[in-house]
Amino acid sequence: MGDPIAEGQRLHPTYFPLALVLLAFNLISAGLFIATIHHPVYDDGFNIFDVHNYAVNGLSHSALLAQRNPPGPTSFVWMAAAVRLLGGDELRDARIGALFSWLLLGIGVFLGARFSRYPELWYGALIALLVFPHAVEGAAEVLTEGPALFFAVIGALAWTEFADRADLRAATLITGILGCVFMGLAVTCRQYNIALLPAAAVVACLQFRAKVWDSGEKWRWASGALFSLALSALPVLLLVMAWKGIASPGMESGTSYNMMYKAGAGLNIIRPVIAALYAAFYLFPFTFPLMLRPKSAHRVRILAIAAAAGLAAGFWSDSLIQPGPLNTVLNVAARFSHGPEILFGLLVAVAICNLISLGVALWERRSFLISSSPVAFAFFVIVFFVFEQFGVGGNIPFYDRYVIQLAPFIGIVAFALLPSLSKVRLSIFAAMSVVSHVMLWRYAFSS
Image 1 (tube, rainbow, N blue to C red):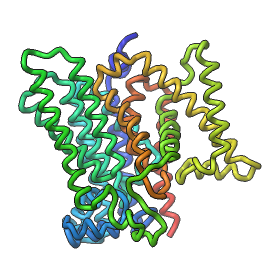
Image 2 (image 1 turned 180 degrees about the horizontal axis):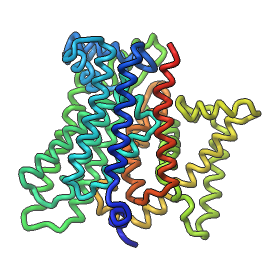
Image 3 (image 1 turned 30 degrees about the horizontal axis):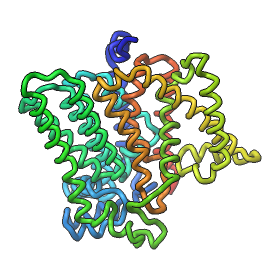
Image 4 (image 1 turned 120 degrees about the vertical axis):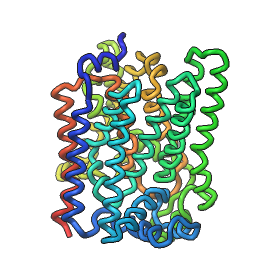
């Protein structure tokens, strides 16, 4: 079977124009929202507290200990820097800081992809991120996703380029170091990004074993990789030392929200199941029509497994359904007896059917998965994101907004396996983008 990337580049020379148009629309929409809507919406009221804290006190130990919200401090510090630099309305300036991170993300991908062996995959990653339902919200509100995604995606791009090169010139080493430092900073923006670090280590191991090395280069490259990976852990270790944990002291103790929410390290059995389901939901629109491709010999077994998963999900829907757009859709079915449970079960069955088909496709092209650093990295980020949920203690729900951190990596896997931009796929992306803009502008009609 041919290389899917090479096939996609023959059929579609570049995804660059689509990515550029989507970025422009998102930035314009978010910019207009910031210019016209001056009251706090969604999580603005909660997050502006920590932005104000860092804008006034800087990045000090006392400011770190005073942080109220569960994400790491770096995104709040980023928006606080915008507040101090612009010196106007605090809410507006913090939003501008968030918007600026999305602009830098787009510029970084467009520039970095030019020097990558796989530019189309990174354009695909950007497309998937920009049409994600929460993308425009993340660009226009005081949310931590923008800076987190900037560091995560640019770090991943730089690291996979380092991993792909079997030499240790100064430029290559600097690329690897930059990638790892950025990924470490992404973890200090949102702790769920810790999945980036083991994924980076696995990709390094795969490339170490797979590449043909010149004399002496193998161990020099390995030393550079280990040094870079050690640097990626440094920002995380500094944050853990300051907080004496992975979450802020206020979230660990529950005092941040009057004992309503607590967060920290712990053991959680149900959360990985929820994370896997929601990742599967969002994999479906990006990888359709992959589920139609399995051979007839496998189709019956796939349908049987998917049906069983759907029945189980419908039965335990109360524990599995989380806040977000999917929950809103399910509430529409509440007018019918057991409507939400039935609809949720059907959606889970479709998502699992697609997920199994995706797994089969990845297995059939496993040599391609191993040889392509961006695809391998994206795959392992998704896997580790699900498994890290075992260690998430506390009682904060798994909002489906959290899956936006996987969106660029879902995009890489999707465009690697399905490079063609058919009318059906473009229609799906257009619909998702419309939903993203509607989710933001609904706040224009609420006080």
